[in-house]
Length: 192
Image (cartoon, rainbow, N blue to C red; front, side):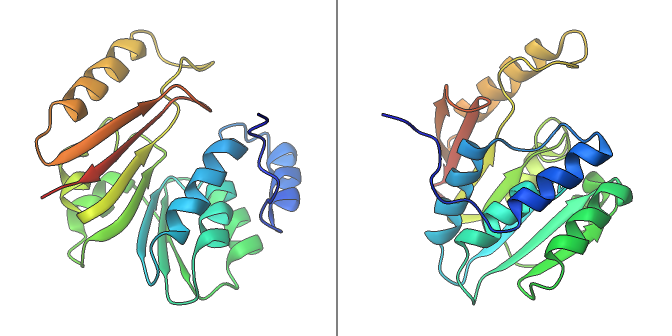
């Protein structure tokens, strides 16, 4: 079975071109993107949070799966790369771009919980984990990627990944599944 996605978001080729031009190499891969689209599609009128917009490839996948009543908030520290995402995807009224530190945003957010949280950066994954998980609605999904060793990982990061996975597996309020697929994923569903 070939697991290469057959349907890609219309904005993806241009986003990839812009990523190459900018030297941006941290985009989600297509298999992760296809899972994001499917998870977004499973949440009609869903509230979705993406931590780490980057150049907007994950954002494009999420938008491609969302229905017209869903909304996406995407947070990015680097305004230069997020500007590219906004240029390509900002005309979609379902998405709100937040430029700033994800950790600070998480600490200050006081809105309703989210049906799907994709943490694709340090805040929400390696920092501010408890706060992020508080923002997942009961029955909602938390997804993280890049759990396989990556070029450029800081020394000792593999131990940080293992601690994170263990911490998530031990939680009583989430049901977790590790996926040795794409860049290494963990999906957790809030049960209480």
